[in-house]
Length: 363
Ligand SMILES: Cc1ncc(COP(=O)(O)O)c(C=O)c1O
Image 1 (cartoon, rainbow, N blue to C red):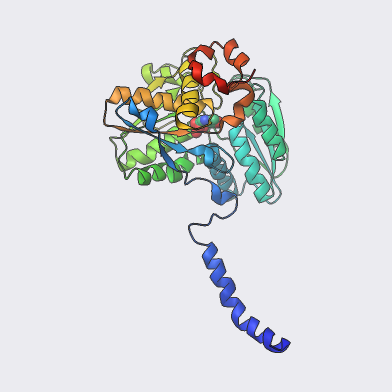
Image 2 (image 1 turned 180 degrees about the horizontal axis):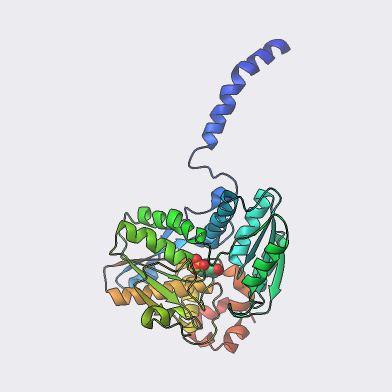
């Protein structure tokens, strides 16, 4: 074909080809960039762990979100909220106080959207999360652990820093209800669809309360009989709040990260929580290793705690029920701590791991 004819042919044919391709990539099977990879996680039947309970225990595979945790959902909705309210402009800075996972989700999204990211976190969180945040270009500021009532608490420091610079937003995951909206609009509907509405109870550990409140709000709207049960670690006040109406700590600190709370956040307020189960570190760690060796999932301790809570809920409800929880993040984020023999020994939880599963430990 002569070159002029080639040009005419190209002009005639290229447009439909390009638009056909564009339409093809608009298909629901194709995710739109990093933000499009959040949510729609598989719901997994934990066969062996369900077996002894006579119930069906299902877990949302939240570690499969692209940022690697359930908190990617909150991060997405917090950023969308800031954009919709005009709180951040091009090239702006997202500032958050986080135990790490929300920060990792935010840092990924900031890279994808051209924002800067500043993260304040308590200085007792895993090194792996700090390293991930730094690799993702975030300005990480570990600060001494302080209660929420202390002006030096990591959240207050994050707010003050955001207020001190131009074009910056403090996304405020604990009290900004855009967080739980992520679970009202995504996690809840996914669970309803994936179970065909056949779910009797949900149970989740609570950091901000976004997951538990949002999922239960959506599901109870579809079927008010679905039970929402808080799974609470050592050192948190929420178990006693649900059980006895008192904000009193049950136990001291926990090896779990990202969960446990000293107050009722705005994300948790107004949620209809039916009951609570307290999960000791021993039970959470034992289940984390059972998930690894019996089901093949390498996840963190908050996932172990969730599944251990689901077993307790199964025992409370009796055989024949379906209980949904989630596997929050990957165990790789806690390799140095949760998979260290000496750390587990020093915290008095080594003995809770069945002998045959201790081959996963390093010194
Ligand atoms: C590992 C992990 N699991 C669970 C949660 C709790 O989720 P939520 O904040 O929605 O209560 C968090 C929160 O940071 C987390 O980091």
